[in-house]
Figure 1 (cartoon, one colour):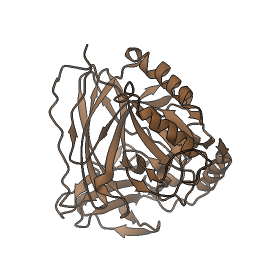
Figure 2 (cartoon, rainbow, N blue to C red; figure 1 turned 90 degrees about the horizontal axis):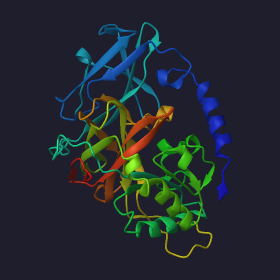
Figure 3 (cartoon, rainbow, N blue to C red; figure 1 turned 135 degrees about the horizontal axis):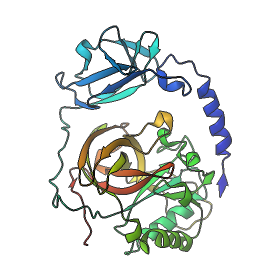
Figure 4 (cartoon, one colour; figure 1 turned 90 degrees about the vertical axis):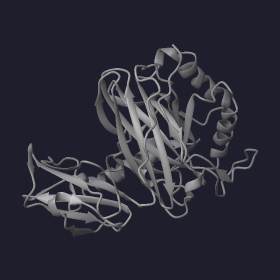
Length: 380
């Protein structure tokens, strides 16, 4: 295993962030009491000049509409005053817009609104094939921590390739590769750079099941990986059946993807929903410490995330409260660089529930462009 002293670096970074001047919105100061909050009735609009997000500003418990100053955060981090008539944000230019506001010397949190190209309509969801059913099919979310500069990572990649050939596991998991080892990796995902540390890991390669820190394992043999997966998720499959099901539809275009997600509860409670955009077939030279095989083509690489608060290192998703049998839907959007090929992308969509003090993924599905997946049920 290669140790990167990640925890020390993370602590230093967090300390620097804590000292940052809060001139770019309230998220930069975790210790400040934020009495000014900014929300929107939707975070995905069409860039046609008519579709709009209604901004909602609260000062304490009071909703306010006058005397507010809005700011747009540029890619360079600079803030530009933003005119928002009647608190309705609209645009004719596709892209992601990060906004915050000030009121009575208070600074709000930041929100991001995605404006989709008119050629990329927000998709719909298929009808629920069995509205009374709450016996959902469950999959495990496997997160692989890797990087092109990691010489031992091909060993884990090889294990996961072999793992995928096991017919027993074929429809029981979704794999996402987080490239966070080296920043010059063409698939380096800055938003998830601290995820391994948050989960309690300190070396590459590593894998984790359902973003549950207790399941994090380093570079082991395939037999150990398979044993852990089978003992934890296959043999005890019925005892850990999920309390939530997912449906999703995905459409992609150059630089953008639109995702509609449905979540259905099997029990009363709070759930969180998030999504990661993955890309296959990426060609990049991989450092290798002698593992046999060709590792120059990378699959399931995370290219963008949605529904998560990366600024606060919270990747459990967007929260919703549901009663048993009830459902809710979310509109998510991804913005990605020009080197990402939309036709090679797909989305890992997951739902989390709180177990003890932690939010743990309880189900996940994988959806491809042009595909609509309904809720999936297991036989009684």
